[in-house]
Structures are given as structure tokens and as C-alpha cells.
Image (cartoon, rainbow, N blue to C red; front, side, top):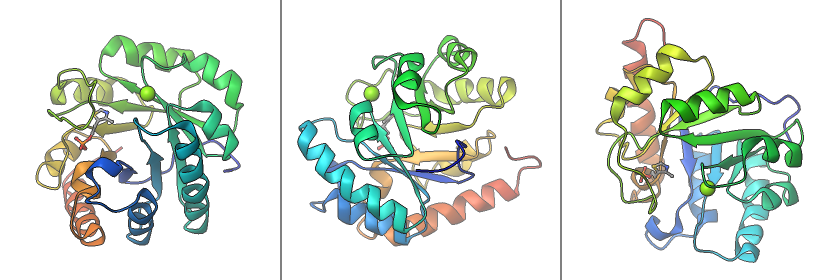
Length: 222
Ligand code: TZP
Ligand code: MG
């Protein structure tokens, strides 16, 4: 468990999705992400049993520790606690964030998915959320229950109005990530473009190069 609760300064947020991983296990995919230098991994599996998720999280938690990477669990507060994750990521239909904070204590990061300014306001005012998920920026079929894409305007609004760490997500790929970065976000999350790549390591390297070129073209990245 990390000592002080602080969202890491990092460019790419890796998320599991065995359905899109070309037959590779989540463990294998995470191993490749970590070897490619990703420092923030979220375990996200919507269709698995609690026991399957717990067993995978135990292993991935350890892998993240060995690579000095943060490990965040999606949805399941009790699994995050059971494996001593560094964070929990919840959405608007999960437990309210103040309740999540009560359950996980002060050390664990809390991320919240948002797609409207009101949700962002509430999250920031709650004082318990450490970063906001922002999206879907573009159309995506990866998140089954996703709302229609919010576009870059919502991201612009957050970049202009808040200092809380932001993670842009949804339909982001190597081909369009530069544009997202140019809107001022530091960190982006990608599912299919990473886990669905034939060579995950090479794809991550290419994405990170693209991000770093886009950031260099900005005066004041945040
Ligand atoms: N939350 C908003 S969009 C999304 C999630 C989990 C799915 C992102 O997946 P992809 O494949 O990067 O579009
Ligand atoms: Mg959720």
C-alpha cells in the first residue's frame, strides 16, 4: 500500500479487459504493460465472479508491487480491501464516494467516473475523490453501459475549472491521443488499443512517444 495518498504523475493508465485481449490472460497482459513501463493499472472485469476477480487481483496486485506500479480495483470495494490495492475506481451507479472513503480509509485512492459538470462538481466538493475519469471522450463499445460520448468539450471544462487529476477515457487510441493531450489532460486511459494490440509493449511505446510529443507542444501541461 502506498504511504501517502497521491495520484501518480503518469501518462498512460492501463486497464484490463480479458474479452479484448486476444486470448491472453489478464495476468499476461498486465505483465506486458508493466514491462513496458505503465505505472498505473486498473483491474476491470464485469462478467467474472467475485472469486475469479479476487484470485486475479491477488496475482496482479503482487505484479504491480514488483514493478513499483499503482494497482486500482474497479467497482468492488471489498476486493480492493482484501488485496490491499492502492485504489478503488467507482462509477455513478456504484457506492457513493463518501461511503467508499469511509470503508477504505485514508490511504486508498478513490477515482470516480464522471460525464457531466454536475458530477465533477459533486466529486470535487465531496473532498474524498483523488481523480476523475472523464469520458467517454469518443464513441466506444468497450463499456457496455457507457453514455453517449461527451466529446472534448467536457474535458475542456474540467481542465479550465479544476486542479484535481483527470484521466480521459473512451475511444482513445494511438491515432487520436495527441488531440486529447492537446486539450490539456496529463493522463489517458485506453483499453482496447492496448490490450488488443498484437504486441502490447510496442503499442505502449508508440502511444507514450505520441503523448510525449503532444505534451512537448503544449506550454503548460497539467
Ligand atoms: N469508461 C468510460 S469509456 C470506457 C470506460 C471504462 C471504455 C474505454 O475503452 P476503450 O476501448 O479505450 O474505448
Ligand atoms: Mg463501476
